[in-house]
Length: 238
Ligand code: MN3
Image (tube, rainbow, N blue to C red; front, side):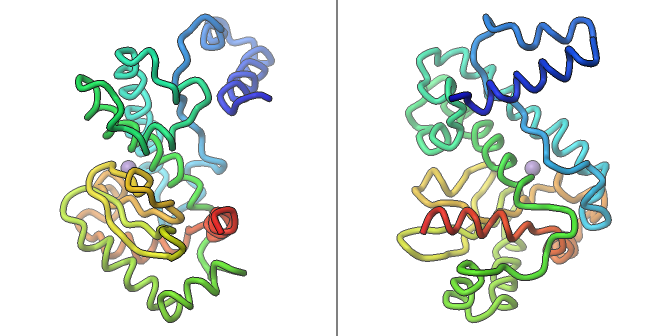
């Protein structure tokens, strides 16, 4: 079976070959060491306007996320036996970052977390998103938090209270839904929890449009939440 990375490389190769861009073929050379790759969002970068602006998306994905991937790959040069690279097992790497060699442990924690969290984040949003979670997830949110409005309010509170840079999450842990926050690029998966929905509250996620008004960003962000993706993750975990 093709791994996702191989599939991406194949797709890239086909695209490149069709466009006959000289020089770009080198990216698909099989002798390059295995490494993590930047996943493109499934929508165009201005698709989340006006709630998340195109310029923010462009820099957030093309610069910030790209840098986490590049720095992770750079660090992993010092961990040639890392078992998680070959099959694109970023979740397992982030879960087990403490297994990394001393010299690169922090780099793996921060950049691995950055890569994993952002890879999820792009999928947790979609154009014309928002609304209400359906099916089992909708019921579970009501059972755990009373109703959707109360859930949103508690989640927003957690996101607002993150001091400095970090994330707010809806997680699945020990058979229950819970809200938590993580600092920096730490991910719930590292403490054995499954992230279902995450909100990036680093200033780079909102400052261009919202400046210091994080609460406005959080309020607008509900309009682009991809509840179908969250519900699918929840259904798989149950
Ligand atoms: Mn970010």
